[in-house]
Image 1 (cartoon, rainbow, N blue to C red):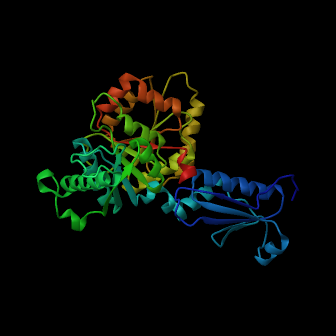
Image 2 (image 1 turned 45 degrees about the vertical axis):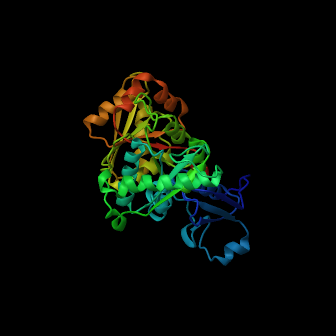
Length: 395
């Protein structure tokens, strides 16, 4: 094998989707040759597409290689099992292996720990009922938080005026709100849910709501937050707090319109442009879809001047990631009113939720600030699943 001038890392560590999971141990046996370098590149590309928490070790010492009794180099070992010897697997083969063996590490597949922020308004009560029904469907734990940015909040005054007294007051109010929303028959609740429903925990946190919620977001698999709250006017996309959380959280966010009811997700629309179909977020959406048996509709809204070959390449890349085991559809819609056309499609195809990727800042900000699109979104009554390219570093 030809020797090439490369610097192979002895050990590298990258956090993937599951912060608390044991990292996948990957060992690459070889030398400083082109084939070993290519194996490193293929592993790196596969792990970018499927961001599982992992640790890579490059084994170059002849005595360590000999001790493993390998038949040929380069060789790849994953969690103590030899994956290949004397050849370099295709990236798609490695992606499929990681997906089959480590799908449970992806947050949108796990969905074990859900977070719902509330402001104890009627709007957030409907969001809480939605989150509770979703947690019950998934057999997940649900944490309900109230962010308090002032010690003078609350219906009842504190006798002491100290922060601890206000915390106790607000905790009582929060627990009463949860009780009345979920378990009181007079408020469309059902006390029997205590025995059959998911575990529900509550906590009062401190700070400006968007920052406080973002600060704890990395501990959760999904945040379910209302599109509008106490000061809702019906004219904004999400409401200021929901908007900031959806952009900044360190986990996926599901923004739920007021008075929505949870019925699952049979059809999802992934809103994409030429840059948003990165493998990481496609994998995450795929994991979420598999949990609910969803079909994914990839919708590209563009103009007649766009390069058709680039569109064909998008479809080819999706097929490469999905294989043939999951339903998906790709549509190219012509026009400039992105959200209007997305919702026209959503209505005609009975879509249950939209998927947006926030790392496309220009695309995302257009959605937030164009008045025609904000009115369309506010009135559509569809949940929006928000993904972040930046989640990988924190998850």
